[in-house]
Amino acid sequence: MLVKFGALIALLPLVAAQCCVSDLPFGYTFSAPTDWVSGEPASLTWTASIGDPTQFAIILNIYNQTTQQADQWVLANYVESCACYASFTLPDVPPASGYDLIPSVTT
Ligand SMILES: *[C@@H]1O[C@H](CO)[C@@H](O)[C@H](O)[C@H]1NC(C)=O
Image (cartoon, rainbow, N blue to C red; front, side):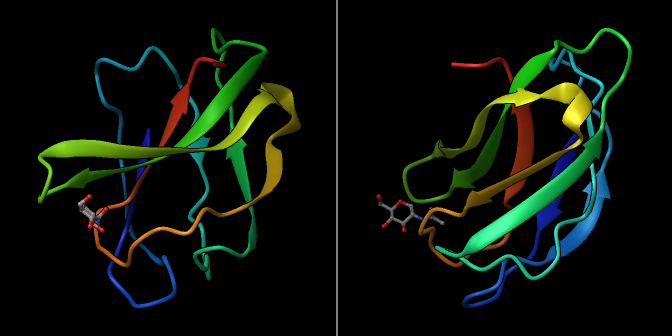
C-alpha cells in the first residue's frame, strides 16, 4: 500500500492514496499524512490485515530522477502492527513530489 506525496518546499502533503503494489506481501493501509514537514516530528496511523507480520518497518521512499535509484529512509522500525500508530522524527529530505510510504520487513 503506497501513499503518494505532492511537491512543496517544506511540507510533504498527501496528494492521493494509491492501492496495492503487487510485489509487497502486506495489507497495511496507511492513513493520509497531513502537514508532514521535513526534519520535524510526525505521526502515522494505519490498519493492518490478517497475514501481516506482528512487527514491521515503515519506509519513506522516492524514486530519484537524477540518480535513477530509489532513495529510502526508515521512519520507524520494529513497529507493532496492532498498535496502528507510530510517531517519529522525519528525516531531512529534499522537497519533491512522489514520496511513498512503504511497509517493509523489520531490518
Ligand atoms: C536526487 O539525488 C541527487 C544526487 O544525490 C540529490 O542531490 C537530490 O537531492 C536527490 N533528489 C531527491 C528528490 O531525492
